[in-house]
Image (cartoon, rainbow, N blue to C red; front, side):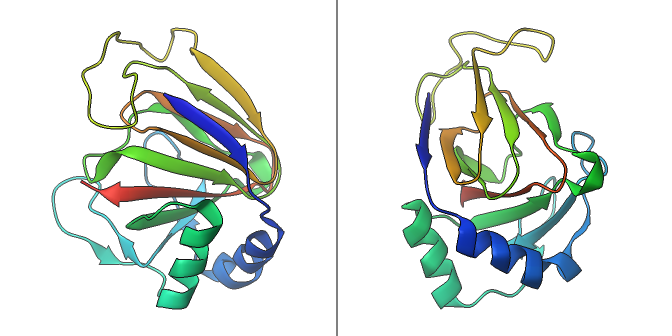
Length: 173
């Protein structure tokens, strides 16, 4: 299941570029090697272990983000594609994340690909299994302000243009 809508992102994109740029670090994921990223609040455990401190964010900022995207979340990842347009290859999100997630394209463009294996936003069994070589069941061009809500346990990927900023949001499992 996937839902796409538009949210104005001009203010948040400017904030990201000015405030968060010094906090960006190279993404260590095998799926997004070379992309730059930072976690707001806490960085969840991507494997075994516990959360680590991310970029400090006050409650007012967190509330503004929740109001803008109209969704309550526990984790927020800010990504920057750099000058080489580095995105993320097909993957399913780590076990820290609940099934439902939100991606917000703040600047630039991004091709979002999605393989619908589970047909709900919540926990559900896969009705079909896909591999990264299978054609996606949904492909969409994200422009500034595009917000995508989807099941994060389904295979998905993002191919951005250069200098693209994005935010991804999850609830804890």
